[in-house]
Length: 58
Image (tube, rainbow, N blue to C red; front, side, top):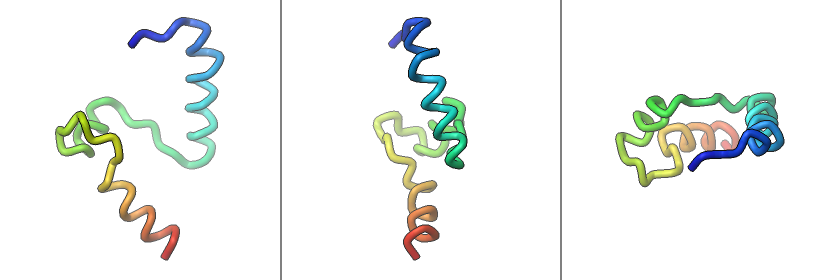
């Protein structure tokens, strides 16, 4: 999927900046695939989410 020039600057980049300010870390495609154990159909990064949930809700 190719985003238009304006869409990148109007929504995608600001969204990434907000998430980064909230403490989220931007992952490269390679890092994301590794955290998904090579499963491209797995959207949720369970190995990241489970410890975060335990710490946040514990």
